[in-house]
Length: 190
Image (cartoon, one colour):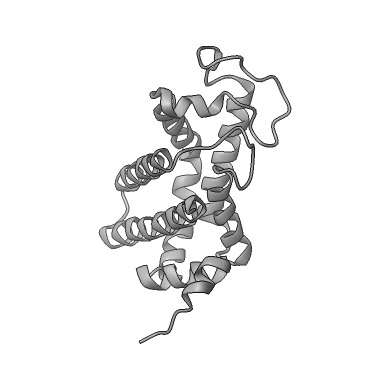
């Protein structure tokens, strides 16, 4: 039986990542599968990003979060939700960030820097970082992660991979997205 310092889980993101990764069985074989999918997934990133934004713009409760100024964005801000289109400069800025995130998932080494990055992805959507005017409720983050997981599964099923590679890739991304989800939800705790 492994001993886990539960207080350290809350204060040390690398320790937390190690624990959750070990618990769900995310390891080197999974990282290899994710990195192995990079050549097939990289050209599809723009389509994945567009699908995510189509979904986000399909609901007022998710679209409304794109009206306030985004952290790091310096351009014009729409006055209201009706003025916000997917070709708006601020949405292009956000799409670029989502695309970079997806590329990083399939290309970056799974090291301390990536763990900090994944943790910041969660933190940016809360009052703890990013724009103080932009707080995305946890239910919407969970819905988004579910959508992304299904979209990735659908894409992977369509890549024509041999069955063993397909299974390994689906399982690897599933574990990774659960880890990402943990690094999101941790910032919503009181």
